[in-house]
Image (tube, rainbow, N blue to C red):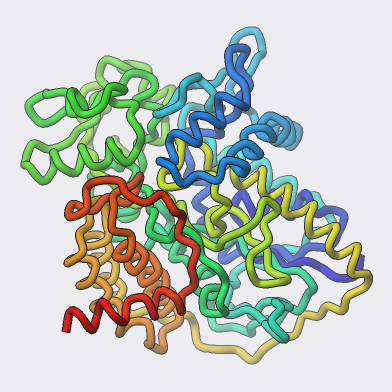
Length: 513
């Protein structure tokens, strides 16, 4: 019990993994004050789980597999859905106040591409915030967890082909830390901050993915980025999310002249899969028709009560959702790809586990089913904790140490270069892509990868992974849509390394020359 496990990242996946490892000592590394700046806290819709009398894990798995457009790892999806009810029970025991009906039973709602009402929420659109509040409180009262705030992942400690810890840098330029341990967990989140329009917090730049990829970690499905179709287009960065639960409650998408935007696009209309809705919203905007969410009839007068977060964001822009149409646009929301893991969170690098959005477990395929993201964090966080516990028990005593490093300069960032990268990703590697635009994006991103600024270099490496894999996948599938290759073709997952992607692009660059 003397070897603490460093968990880098303090969103839902990191917190839940830390709690499940108790009483084994854990060093939980948070980039800011615990509970702040995590995408998990911004989640609105809720957590999917088959808890209704008319539902079951098999149906949930079928919906998950169907949404993933042929690339879901079916075993992973079945594990996710089978273990969902138990993890919901864990969260309730930790104090998460899921919405209940008058008789005290859990009251699930329905979201896009779900065949049943199975999304458990808190206060309409405050689910992520409520879940994080409960888990932060649990962490604070768990003596086996030591929280280190204000530190970011700088590098992994790798010797003899095995990850033996992590190097952390202080955000304010203070002393860094070298943490050596027999097991290291990355819970560093997603990549939405690579895009000019995103619903993610600014720190979601894929730092953990970039660092592990530089050490040769196997990467899965980096080209699949989910764009949420209804971010509020009110000039804010990040863009406030208008949860899908609104459409589940009857809100509809319309053009400026009142035409039902999804009419004739998909049989499920406004509850079609997210990639379908996002492309339809983008097309309407580009055609000059505009795209708006109409919640005036439903939820109507109850909007402020049932969806207080969305209502507050709209009100801050001078809009009353019970009276006004809400302008929306697609925004980078979730990364289906990441570090390839097994069903217990192990990456291809011995000694390194990954949980949450930085991991690619295979449950999302090419298109994540709504509200499966928080579920993935707790299900695979629990499985990773169990596997780490077994591994450390089998290994016996292992030395661990925390070494203070000399102070360094505060994390610098070139706002002009970062804005250029985000614009390139939005315009060329966004909702709709083509080969010419992807090649141009790689040419623009390439020089940024070699810069001295660690923030920009990490962002550029992640952007390269996404754009390169998108260029090599010459088909359209799920969240990856190429206008020059609109038909679905091969169904193989992308399992690759950064070096392999670099090498694969060489002949294409030569042909271009």
